[in-house]
Amino acid sequence: MKFGKVDNPALIDFSLPEDHPETTTVLSGVAQSELLNVFVGCAKWNRQDLKNFYPRGTKDELGYYATQFNAIELNATFYRLFPPEQFSKWYDKTPAGFKFFPKLSQDISHLRRLNEKVYPFVDAYLDAASNLKEKLGTLFLQMHNNFGPKNWDRVVRFIEYWPKEFRLAVEFRHTDWFNDEKVANELSHLLEENDIANVLVDTAGRRDLLHMRLTNNEAFIRYVGANHASDYPRLDEWVARIHQWVGSGLSHVHFFVHQNLEVESPLLSAYFIKKLNAALNTQLPIPKTLERIQKDLFQ
Image (cartoon, rainbow, N blue to C red):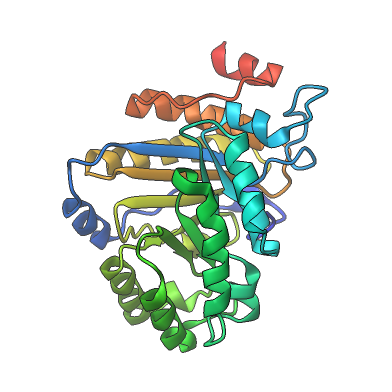
């Protein structure tokens, strides 16, 4: 994931901004009876991206990945519409409790850009993805960088059309969605009214996407490591913020680890999961396949 990549990460202030004031309001209104659900994973499971992650001789990459993590941010579904049978195969390869968080296809977000012809593609996508059954987590829509507030009517129609039985998170990248206060408020209120998560992206070159404004009882966080020593203290800060949100009522935490160059995503994930387990008293699986994960985390 090269989005937001910079030449010199050492020059970036990676500290997390303060919460938007409305985040406190949103969390104060959530049902306190919901159980805490925490899912952490990488963006992909293929061997080429997760270098040195799989034991020699591993043939079923997804099957092994699902023994090490409890979730995957499924980016492959952005590039093409897989048939229902493929989702069923993914379902069968993974254990109970595992969840997929698929990205909606580029046909929806980038090619048709939520226009009036997009809805048959939405229906086909959801028909296929529903074969993940209870393993289907929140789906997420990532809009193009140049999809700005002038497309407001398309966003409203899309959200009104979206079937409420499917959880949805949306990632807007055009700066005016956040830098224009009036637009930001209208967008957040639309998401709140429809129980849709406002995706948070932590990447070096786009700190404006860290709006820290939750719009429902879900924190959907896409963390992009910079292949730099700062990656680890950044994760520490996220653990502290998530702990704060959970203390305020947050029940759904979905955190996905990327890197500009996918070299150590499993290592970063293992570090984060260990710290998060300690902070939240959870028992998420910690990836243990790399000897240096064991060395770095448990010494």
